[in-house]
Structures are given as C-alpha cells and as structure tokens.
Length: 239
Ligand code: SAH
Image 1 (cartoon, rainbow, N blue to C red):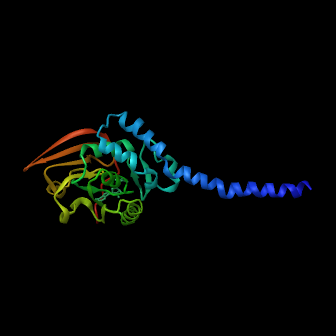
Image 2: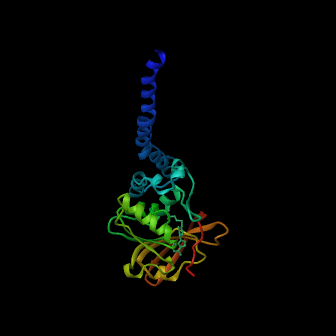
Image 3: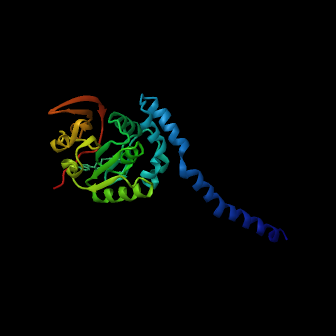
C-alpha cells in the first residue's frame, strides 16, 4: 500500500526535477541582468567611466552570450576570459574604457580590428555607431558574425582578413579600435582615420605589458598619448 501511494509522489518529484527545475534554471540564468548591473557599478563606474552612452551599452549587451558556455558563469568577473583559438575577450572595464575614449554614438563610423567574440563590436553598435569589424581567424570571424546576428546586432559588418590593411572601401572612419597588441601602429589604419578622428590601440611587445595609446589625427599631424598599461593578445599577420 505504501509503495502504491509512494509511486505518484515519486512521479511528481520526478516531474518537478525533470521538467520544472531546468525551466526555472533556464529562465533565471538567461538574462543575468543583476550580474551585469553589478559589473557596471562595481568595476566600471567605480573606476571612473562616466559616459552615459557607454554605460548604457555595457548594461544592455549580454556578455555571457559572447563567451563559451563553460565560461558563462564567469562572464561578469573582473577579468578577461578565453574564447577559444588562444584568444580572449577583454576585461569588462577595458572594454568600457576603450569605448568611452573613442566616443561612439549615432552617426559615428567605427572600425574594430580583432572581432574575437564580437562583444566589443556589439557594445559599439549598442552605443549607436555604424560598426565594421575585422578578424584574422576565420572560425572566430564566422562564429562572431552568427552570434551578432542572433543577438540582434546584425548591422555590424564583419570580415575575415588581416586588419593591418584596414577596410579601405568604408574609410574614412571617425574612430578605430584595435583589440590586439601591435609593436607599431599600422600606417593604413592612420590613413583610414578621418581628420579629427581617434584611434585607441595597445602598443608594445606581445610578450610584455603594452601601453594603451590614443592616437589623434589632425590634418597631416598625428599625436599619441599614453593612457595606461595593458595586456592584450598579439596582433597577428597573415602569411
Ligand atoms: N574584441 C574582441 C577581443 C579580441 S582578442 C572581443 O570583444 O571579444 C583579439 C582578437 O584580435 C583575436 O580574436 C585575434 O584573432 C584578432 N587579431 C589578431 N591580429 C589580427 C589582425 N591582424 N587582424 C584582425 N584580427 C586580428
């Protein structure tokens, strides 16, 4: 009798475990907006990023959808994360700082070198900019393109190529953001900056710390300012 009574109980528990619990987990885990808002307050605003457009984009874009599934729980940690092929998605603060520095917004045309996961490109798009992004590893270029499309950032134009040469067909750009460490600023990128344009780029040896540089172009003159020490994956060249 006990066993007969217990059977529906077990069935109900099984139903709860198999059907309802995973559903709850999925809906609770999908959005992660609490973690994202905490990331912006504790890691980004706390370190001095103020631009409202940048902060709104950082609050909006679901960073956990840009990292491999096994990294999703760490997506809002205060550090870079591996995204496969030996590459990384930058620390949230660095993404916000670089975004704020190049002043994205509606009507701005921005070129990114190093699409990686597509996260920085999505942040620039969420800030209202027209975004062009180049990635040298074809598999990453493909997956980032699909991800951007799926998450509603289909307007980002992507290309699998060596970003050293920029994207001449769409030049000049209001801003260029390079997310891999280069020993010198590629001359084609300077050429493709608008008069008055801004470029942010980590410059230095790939084996040590690099310096995040702000390059400003005014007429024929370019000026460079050192912003902060950083560590990025190396800028690669096509064979
Ligand atoms: N911005 C990315 C992170 C980039 S990691 C994000 O938000 O996820 C740096 C990326 O630059 C890597 O994916 C690397 O493959 C790419 N890269 C390195 N050298 C490059 C080059 N010459 N042209 C284009 N992409 C390059």
